Amino acid sequence: MPDHATPLTPQKRLGGRLGLKKGAVLPTIIIKEEDRKPLRNWQTDRKIPIHIWHAFFDEAYGISLADAETLISRGDIEPTKQVFQAPGGATTEKVIYKIYYRHAYPLAVTVEEPKLIADSITDKNGHILLYVRFVGGQSRLSTEALSVLDSFK
Image 1: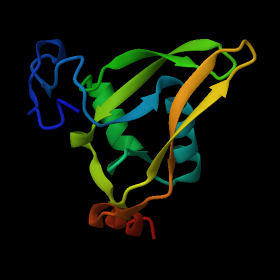
Image 2: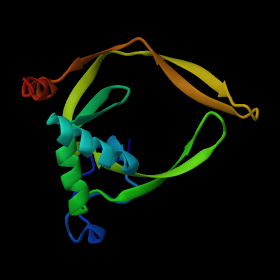
Image 3: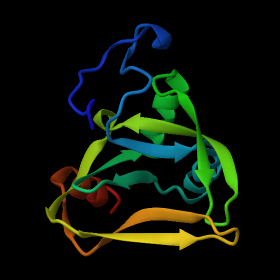
């Protein structure tokens, strides 16, 4: 990921607040716009804080829903339109928010790499969707993640 170590710099589109160029490629935690309200409602109704976790091949990150909402409402994280393709061939355009890993806490690191297995799905129209499936592997939770979990007691 070429922008993994790129420093945050003042961005004109963010009103001078720190960020990265629009097309930056780095680990992010993704939240769909359509999920925000149901997540907020669930959290409010149950009085249990929600954290969103995103795992990559070798590391994982987490952020509280409250912190994510602050970043989004301040405009630090802008919406992005993304096209999703279902195995049935249908495509859907959805608004998502890609939160830079630097706004998150480290969740876990890989201590045993998984095997990468090539696989495919053939939809009802005969389209073949290729993907890589992860098998096995092991991660270790970070002390920050354990602290977050302990705070819920």
